[in-house]
Length: 214
Image 1 (cartoon, helix red, strand yellow):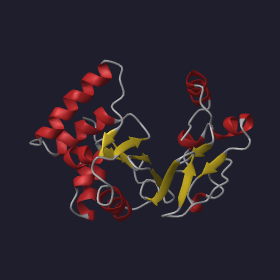
Image 2 (image 1 turned 180 degrees about the horizontal axis):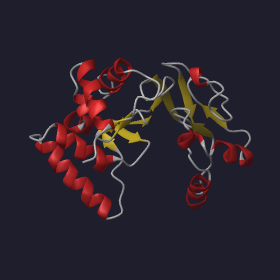
Image 3 (image 1 turned 90 degrees about the vertical axis):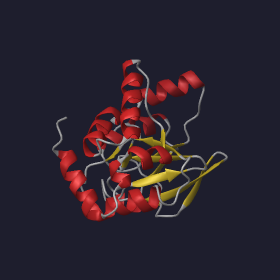
């Protein structure tokens, strides 16, 4: 999800790395904005996005559906369709890591721009937390952890795991460090959207979060 090309190029230069593919989790500009410039520098790049995002992701060359596999060097990945934030949202799953874009955040989930509460509920509680190993590292698309955990604590004021994780996250951010990745076990402990028991509960949480100013 290269929102910008320059940070990618800088990181590759520092690590003497080679870019072989772009994995777009969904079509929003802040996840695809760097595609064009990266393709101008490396026109042979494979650009992945869900088949339903055809025409919405700049330079897309690969159009996987749910369950399709692909290789990045020696690493095999699996595409999971996880609609909710958008209808074409996907997660890219590897042996110990999953890249979730704006569907699953540390302590939260993305707004429902195109999908429904039922879609998001299934994506979070079944396709991700319900089917992947709890130790899987979760790499989300934005550093929203502190804000998300403030809402989580508002929703579950007696949840000591949330309180502890919020204190940790605030300290990490004050020190200039990222809180990402989490693990799916972390999310099961502190994320009210993953912990939701019904579609109606998730829908109410999402409505409250959309208007939360805490």
